[in-house]
Amino acid sequence: MKGIDFQPELLKTLRQYDRKAFTADLMAGIIVGIVALPLAIAFGIASGVSPEKGIITAIVAGFIISVLGGSRVQIGGPTGAFIVIVYGIIEQYGLEGLMVATLMAGVFLIILGLCRLGTIIKYIPYPIIVGFTSGIALTIFTTQIKDLFGLTMDTNPSEFIEKWGAYLDSFPTLHIGSMVVGFLSIAIIVLTPRFSKKVPGSLVAIVVLTIAVWLLKTYAGVTGIETIGDRFSISAQLPEASVPALSWATVQGLISPAITIALLGAIESLLSATVADGVAGTRHNSNTELIAQGVANIASPLFGGIPATGAIARTMTNINNGGRTPIAGIIHAGVLFLILLFLMPLAQYIPMACLAGVLVVVSYGMSGWRSFVAIFRNPLSDVIVLLVTFLLTVFFDLTIAIEVGIVIACLLFMKRISETAEIRAFTNEIDTTEDARLSLDNEHLTIPEGVEVYEINGPYFFGASNTFEDVMATMGDRPKVRIVRMRKVPFIDSTGIHNLENLIRSSQREGIAIILSGVTPSVHATLEKARTYRLIGEENICSHIDIALEKAKQVVQTQP
Image (cartoon, rainbow, N blue to C red; front, side):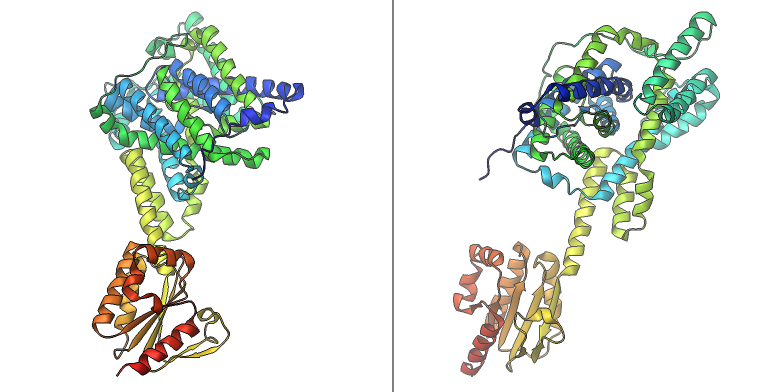
């Protein structure tokens, strides 16, 4: 058994660390910390918690992910992908329930890493990732309409259709000032990259519009533009660690949301690390990264934070500004900690409409609409998985969407695999000129009279078992010997074994001998473990079709 795959990149990079590397990491860390500030606040509020909890998440989780992670350049923290699931958990179970679910998700992530499943997570079907990411983006956009237009609403339903209905009913209450602030923030974020690639547009929008709204309120008597301080009381300190009260009933109820958080965190963090590797020329350790993500998600809720994962936008910002070691991520967490202690009270003046504008841009970036549209050019099965995952995410919830999407993708995958399993029957001869795959030798193989040969090409599992029975049903007179050629069977499952044993028993009852030919080592081991060979007899296992045909010839000659 292999040992634990836990090799933090920080320890490797420190062996050859120098002043030049530190200078580059220092600049990158400061810039990433500034970029992370508005996003952490926006993600925290959109998730249903107070703004400083988003920053606390970025500090605690970001620090741990950089210290323990398997990527040199990964930046961790709260992301838009968690907004929907976190908001739903808080609505149903409260903040205490969110803490428990996040702790459980952290444990699940550590288990995934310890079991070396980091590489497996990467194989989640692409249509599922695009489907739930696009669904999350649309949901985030929907949740920001109220603040973007400054609507006054008595109730704000959680369901997608009802929410839009409430928006339409409340549209006459829109506040022009809030709407102008919201759309100006979007314009500033979109236009800033044309003038500066390093200064984040979201930070420019928040600084400019916060000052503008404060001046309008103070000197022009403009009211009605809601700010963070109007809705939240802000704490400018890192809270003491506290462990939530755990009960078996609570744990049972939160297993499904916790698994969703873990899967989402694993997928997003490994996707971010993979993208970063392509840009920075590095190579991350998936299992170490999952363990770090797990520890981060255990620590974050203990200090009042929310779920965290690798953030693609902040990771790319780190790379583009020269960050090449985990030290940059640690500095980013330190910058946010200083902002929390000394500048957090100023966050009360940030307009809610401005944050809504930031999240509208984030949702557009998450939507991946080009990828969404491109999948429609793929096979119908991919389109079905995409649409089912997307619609379930939007109209029900992310937990159901991921579970159902993976089940459908697995079923469609098994259908494709079963279709690749080819089963052919021969009664007279095996003509290698017709299909060279049928024999290891370039020979013209003659089948003795009274013998049938079945060639299985592909995995012999439950999908192919029925096909085998259908092929046998089309054969004519009852033979004296049946040869099952399995040289191109990579694996056999329990259903395939059951089907093969039924064939052996039914054939033996009818006086028909069964011979297996060309069984691969892996299938041989499986059949031996299942004791199938006791049923058929070791003498009826042949290494090559020539030997099997000669054996069948002898059986035919000895039978009356």
